[in-house]
Length: 118
Picture 1 (cartoon, helix red, strand yellow):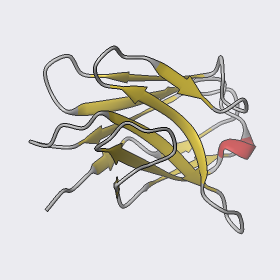
Picture 2 (cartoon, helix red, strand yellow):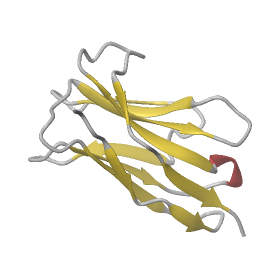
Picture 3 (cartoon, helix red, strand yellow):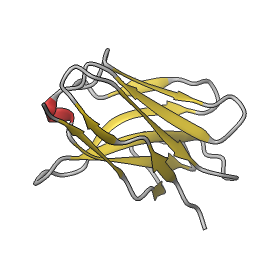
């Protein structure tokens, strides 16, 4: 059974940074990404990376502040988050796509909490 294990969440002040990690263990996917869900809101797309060529795509709200990357030898994806804002607060979910088709994800992790507050 596929398990995506996220880590790296926590409490950070506005303007600070965090790095999230997601380990897919032995499973390889065409693309992996990150979503988030703020309290009282629907889950939204944050970023994704295509495994073959490391092509990346971001939501407008995080562009130029967040960077998605992958480990060269392991099935791990990272999300480096800089200049964090209170509106970045939420549960962040790792996602994996077998096909790599835009918006089509087959697996989600359990989520890790990110709280941006002074």
